[in-house]
Each structure stands twice: as structure tokens, then as C-alpha cells.
Length: 218
Ligand code: T5A
Ligand code: NA
Image 1 (cartoon, rainbow, N blue to C red):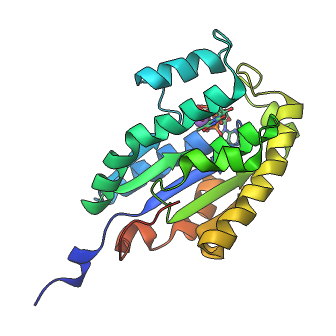
Image 2 (tube, rainbow, N blue to C red; image 1 turned 90 degrees about the vertical axis):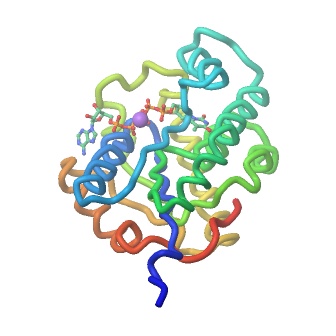
């Protein structure tokens, strides 16, 4: 008899939220926990600043380079496309892939600058579809008081507030197109341990049982 678990693939889980809400901290904790439990898991950060495209994005975010809003939007998307095949391959190999930001940041931040929502959406169409997106929410006052807020280009209160609004539209779009269960809000207030606990409950069996069926498309 064949083992039913062998046909299951790794889960693709994305963390989203405004700047300094605690994504990277929680993503690191989740990946560490899964590895401790003996599961195959890896972290995928977006932007991936280590590639040639990623270095251009990094210079832009640090205000060391200027770029047209459309051009930088396409670079963020290209940075995801250059990682897409590796993500799909790893999921098929049973590895859980945890992404620190994804296309939803791409849409929300660029639309917040005034680009049309459709223009922002289009370049990411057909990328691997996350099985679950955790959107971490934190009052702006708390995020702004965290270390290093304000160092990078988008870390101003007006940009964060416009992006928060756009994330609301992105959430609706994801739920309409792909189902309510794929987008879950997480209260990011409280201690790191408290937030980790909330996330553990939401992620649940997804990381232990894997996922049935092909990876979907955005
Ligand atoms: N962007 C990104 C686009 O415009 N388009 C795109 O397509 C993409 C992918 C950089 C920028 O790029 C934009 C969005 C961003 O503006 P980034 O590299 O993810 O994106 O940004 P980072 O600066 O690395 O990360 P963030 O600023 O978003 O911070 P995080 O990851 O949310 O927060 P984290 O975990 O680093 O924590 C921040 C601080 O708070 C503390 C941490 O120790 C740290 O000091 N902290 C807590 N303190 C108290 N209580 C808690 N519960 C805490 N959790 C963490
Ligand atoms: Na981060």
C-alpha cells in the first residue's frame, strides 16, 4: 500500500504586514520551531536583497538610488519571479516554505504611492499561490516606536497609513479570488512569545501534515 502522506507537498506560508510589525522575528521563530520538530522548512525573504535585482532594490530602499515608481514596482516583482521555480520545487520536495513578505506587499506599497491597483497586481499574476497568508496588524504608534523605524524609504507615518488602506483592498481581493481561508489577520500586539503562540494556533496542522494537490497560481 502506498503511503498517503507521500503525495502531500510542503505548505507555502507568507507573512505580511506594515514595517516593524514583527514579521521577521516571527518568521525566524517559526522556521526554527519546525526544524526543531524535525521538519523540512526554509525561509524566503522578499525582497531578496542578495541577487542582482535585489541589490538594486536595496539601494532604492536606502535612498542611495532613485527610480521611477513603475520601474521599482516591476523590479520587486521580478525579484519574486527569479525565486518562483525554487519555491515550487521545494514545495514539491516536501519542504515548507515560509516567506517574509510577498506579492501582497508589492501591491499594497506601490498602490499606496498612487499607481493603479491593476497595474500593481498584474506582474505578479501566476506566481505560486500561498496556502496561507498571515497579515500581522499593529497600531502605527507601536510600530513607529520600535528600533530603526524611519531608516528606510517607506517608513513614514503617511506612507504606512496609505499602505494599511491598500492592504485592506488586497485582503479582499485575495479572499474573493482564492477563498477566505487563505488570508488570516494576526494581532501583533503583546510580547514576542504571545504573538508566537497566536501564530502557532493559526498555522496548526498545515506544517505537520503538508498540503494535498498542486501549488496554486496567484
Ligand atoms: N516592499 C517589499 C515593497 O515596496 N514591495 C515589495 O514587493 C516588497 C516585497 C523593505 C521594504 O520594502 C517594501 C516594504 C518595506 O518597506 P523588508 O526588507 O521586509 O521590506 O523590511 P524590514 O525593514 O526588514 O522589515 P520590517 O521593517 O518590515 O520589520 P519586521 O520584519 O516587521 O519586524 P522585525 O521582526 O524586524 O521587528 C522590528 C523590531 O521590533 C522588535 C524586534 O526585535 C525589532 O527590533 N519586535 C518586538 N518588540 C516588541 N514586541 C514584539 N512582539 C516584537 N516583535 C518584534
Ligand atoms: Na523584516
